[in-house]
Length: 150
Image 1: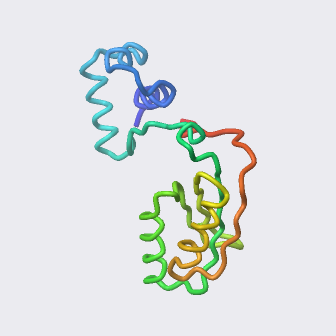
Image 2: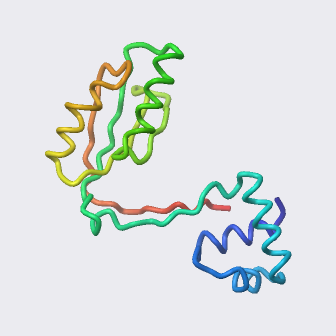
């Protein structure tokens, strides 16, 4: 990846709706070389996916919860089963395996505190290997970006 590739990525992160022609003009290339570079970045997995970011309040999911999960066991089968279950849960929109006092942290979006309580009782505490769930409810979002500092 060279400086031109980085410029393409920075430009697309800032303005993902740009046409290929506009992108090419912004990075100083003609259409075809710019398109080829972007395709190579996609094929290499550098551009993972293109996503539409929705306003969670506007779509009726105003509550963000960070759930810290502790596991009672850490064998491979349990970890794989837990991770599959998290991937399958639509309300868990991000999940990280972490080091520290918890084993996983999940970002969850729900329509209400009552909806989170139901998710906690019906789903989270029943995930494979989970021994404890510590929940933190966000009061407000200060920053949300998917832009990497490249």
